[in-house]
Image (tube, rainbow, N blue to C red; front, side, top):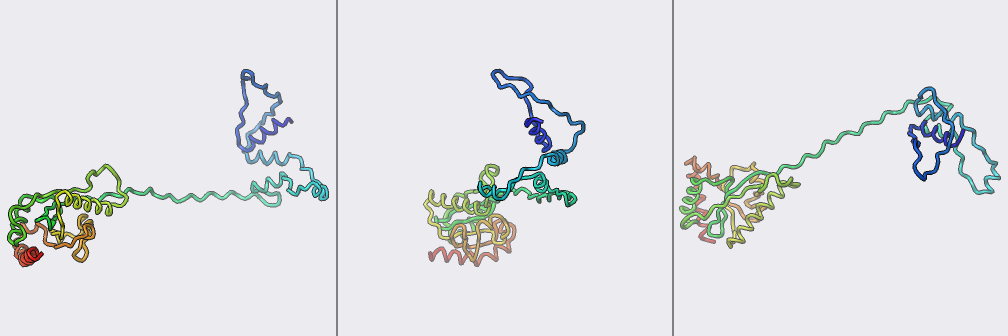
Length: 267
């Protein structure tokens, strides 16, 4: 049997498809002529490989002195050694292959959702920033102006109310740290407005003391009368929506408004 036939038998036994040229290309070397043996039955590649190993001639061995003189101490591979690597030995019955343990599927990480909120703010005297959640209605603006005038904090009309919404573009990006990015956005908005208008902010008037679980309340990070996000002290009162609907809330707030006016005059 020619070496080419043996090589193709081994490749076929290992499940490797061998390809041969059917046509001779121009200026190509002619394909070596040989006789191909037809296999009558199709057997699995693993069994055909073992059959070829059984038919292979035993390797020639050398005596120990001869091998030592040539400095070659590496063992010679034999069909039985190859069988052992394949998991079969003549002394032991073949053992079934262990089925691979499937790796646990890790669900893909869901992209973080940005916080969603809006706020309205107006700066009184360039010193105190009045902030409430959502868009301030005309009725709420009138009520805020009346309360600040009565307390002696505001003279004249209420400054222009600015509305801020987060996120500025809801579908433009996927945030990695929603809370931290929202805090940076609010701080940048306030700092930018203060720089353009020449404000010297001393305090925040936060209208919404009862709203502690909203996204804006988390963003403001109110702790011990201080906004960690804006790095300013915070005075907290009821929301303007509550004050427009409950007269009792206005009466309860009046002593605090008087104290707020005294603080404004003292500073």
